[in-house]
Length: 357
Image (cartoon, rainbow, N blue to C red; front, side):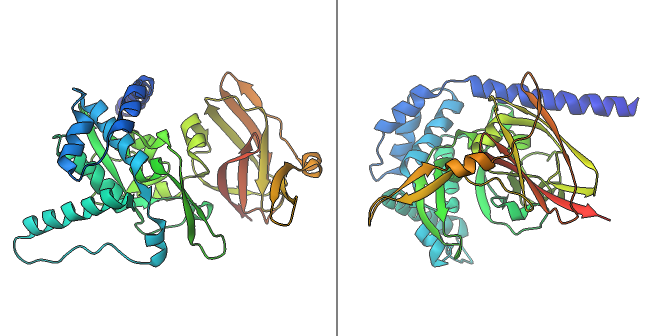
């Protein structure tokens, strides 16, 4: 009986999370998103907060205005990251609250004037705007996964985001990642430039949804976690917000698959958008890129479709029932280290493989 009660509670929680997330997704924020384009920072953060929030009575729309204004106006300061510098918070022995408040106000003012920040600044600015409107908001410090090699590996704290309470529920959001992304030099690891590209996936997510690539450090939880830090580190790698936005109920749910040669791995997931073609890349075989760069003049190149690569593509058969996809992969090599699912020629999910004797 106890087991039945626990299972019922678990599935009821999942149903509530899905219902709440769907409800938020159905809300229309077009008017808010359009309105914030007209709001300018006039050297006064309190006025900025009032200008953004005054048209709205509901906290959710105020929060959306803060979120969208920051993503529109603040760029990621990749040069600061490349410099290796750190944010220096003043030390103090007395009057700490006052001194830190003064320091933070000056810190946020510099961000608003320069229109550049790193994750620390993005999250503190968002919290400040919420605080000025008496909306409960927290800065969350923790782990964020961005690379395929992080599957199954421990890592240090490397990111900062927010949690905000609306009604009885906590929601998670990442203003930094919602603002855009940086290209990276593969050899040096240096960030090359920031590309502004709004990602709505990082707006008001449940813990279950957000923990596909975010996990709070111990002591920064605002609610009980539905998975452990170790389980988070074992998650698959998702290549883009587009994949995260559309995929649900993935099986296998862990990113580290322990198998034996000759075994079959069963893949199954739900996907909101229609997938026409599915491929699998691995360390043993990769489908060649469909695009290639050609030189058209001494100073000009262009990207064209590679007809040779088109003939070399390998696609796998799959079963589709409504929006659920399933297919199998047979492990034929002891030297298989990873599998990468590709949807319509776009990298989607990567799993780490451990072939055991």
